[in-house]
Amino acid sequence: MNPIAPPTPSTSFAWLFFALLTVVSWGVYGVFLHTGQVAMNDPVHGRYKAFLFVGVAYFVTAVLAPLAMLVLKGASWSFPAKGVAWSLVAGIVGAIGAFGVLLAFGAKGTPAVVMSIIFAGAPVVNAIYSLLQHPPAGGWAKLPWPFVLGIVLAATGGCLVSLYKPAPAAPPAKAAATTAGTALAAQAAPAKP
Image (cartoon, rainbow, N blue to C red; front, side):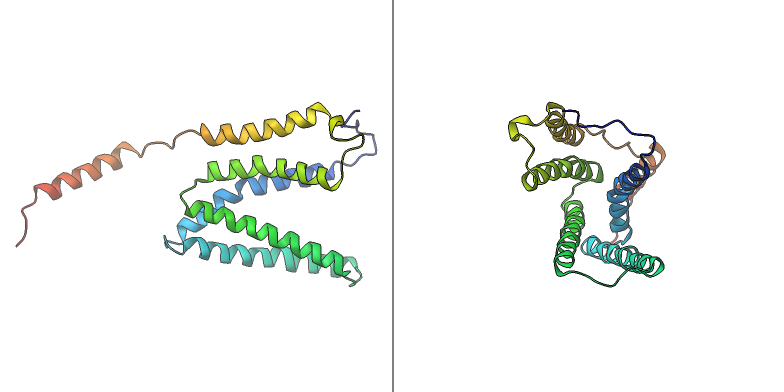
């Protein structure tokens, strides 16, 4: 069984462009979200303030943009209940995941570790859930070994990136020297009555 069919001359690679667009967008998502949280200058509620603006951005991107596309493309306005329900579930689990990212940052997780765990773990969860929904032809024993190896490597990669991430750079020597000098000056100053 060959899991990857060779591309034919008529095959469009637009899907790959959009998939890579998502990889880049979600790859910087955690760092941008953490930066927004810190920039709120509110150590207690900054993550909630940042998430509020994530919601505003979702509204603009995930509500106004599709509405415009539906109008421009002349789509029907029929929304079957099952499609609406599953789409709402997808939105809820996506929002819970985004909120979980912020809560992980609030619990002292760093973007490098948190996002590595998420982006290594999510494909594993996706693969397992998809297989449960659509069992493989020939049964579980017939899973291609490269597929199983890919799941193991994704999980291992997430662990390794999290465990062995590089330490952040030390602050510049000039700033450290200034801070040390200020501290010495404060100690040497006479106490005021």
